[in-house]
Length: 234
Image (cartoon, rainbow, N blue to C red; front, side, top):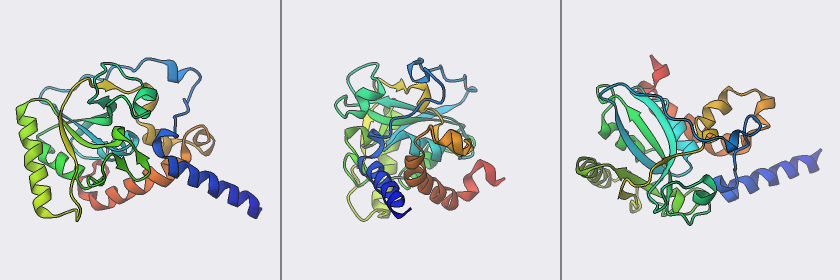
């Protein structure tokens, strides 16, 4: 009994140590990983979008989808020279792309500045090319701007966060032009949401260890801190 528990702990420790790269998704149905990504649903006029990188996109997506005013969150890749990278190419660290989320939101409900200020509190922007045990340029802290207005806003919020001294160490978040964005494979979309709704048996076919140990604590902390801004808070 003790030996079995030790083996489980070693396995869990190994998962945490190697991070999101080793946490390759297990498709929920045969052949799902081979299916092309579906197109995102049409959004209402006036919708705005921001593309952000803050480590493993499963974590960041799970946080933003809870916010009032956020209409959709999509996992994807951005920033590298290749137009259509695969998850395997990005997760290997040599593609130049970052794992990102595209946050589509109603600016009448939540502002771009709020989206960016929250971004700087839900991941560590002071660790270069890493979040926890997820290491590599694909996990860099990054804001991808689409046009001069988004660039100026990102620089403004970054300067405010630096001035407020929210983080004791130097912030290394990059502000980069949005290029070669690609929606990630379908099995990456809504991953933690599916995990939360899954039965015990279904979770056995998912990366339950990574969800439980890495994503769940981040999401719980976020929900506690921003309870008044969540869709479920009323």
